[in-house]
Amino acid sequence: MTELTLVSTRQLPLRPLVENALANEVRLLEVGIRRTERRLREFETAHRMPTREFVRRFENDELGETLELAEWIGEYRLLQRLHEKTETLRGVSFAS
Image (cartoon, one colour):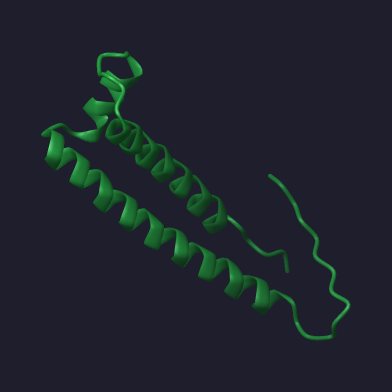
């Protein structure tokens, strides 16, 4: 567990501001997740291959290197990072 203490020079309550900022960031990440999932479905349709199969074959060097395949693996890795960030932010709690 990581702990963070925030100190403000202002008298305004800091907690609501931080909670709203975190909630907004989660919403933006969710938009990115939906966009990335949509892009992955486009690749799957175009290549008639599920992303899971593509990743396995890509990592085993069974596919040639093309710009489109590089974009596909990039979208897959982006989706992983977006999910990780979202789960990290959802796991933030505030001490009383």
